[in-house]
Amino acid sequence: MSSKSKKIRPVRSARTSSHFVKKQPASSFQSVLRAALLSFLCGVGICAALLAVFALLLTHTPLPLTTVRPFSCAAAAAGATVSGLVLARKVGRQLLLCGFACGCFYAICQMAAAFIASGAIMLQSGDVMLSIVMLFGGLLGGAIAALGVAH
Image (cartoon, rainbow, N blue to C red; front, side, top):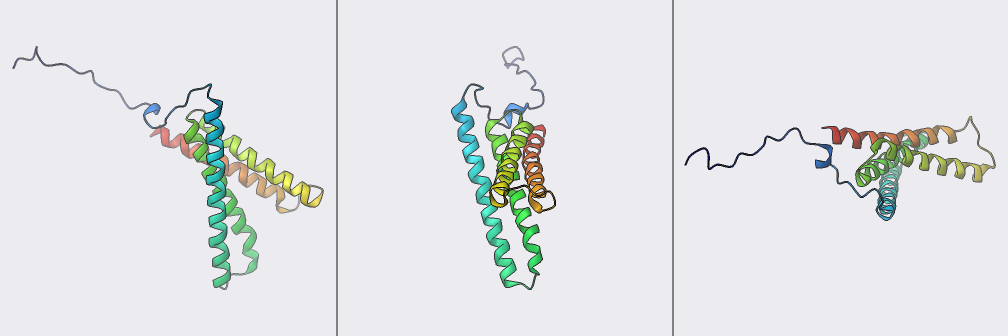
């Protein structure tokens, strides 16, 4: 067999980001809405599961009850992180912006709930802190998705 009869394949360069993330059509509002709903359900599911685990932990161990607020804050942050990650992966473009939008959504919802519950947003209470944690949690999820694409 001579070298002339063999097909020569071009050498591929490094894999592009499209290999790792399925890109949706830009005009597909329904697919973005479906991704947002899925990310919301994943984030709420993780948050609820962590809250249940932390409640079980507080019930069966001699931990002080002052750890309730940090545990609930950690569960909310983990839920926002997972939600931002799922949204960014499903949308497939502008990953950091997807995570930031997800964190903003949760932060605005938390601030609205605090306002409805107390009539005002107290800057000295945990309302603002939890909103900031939720915002950074969503942004962390988008950053994790972006780092997953980079490698």
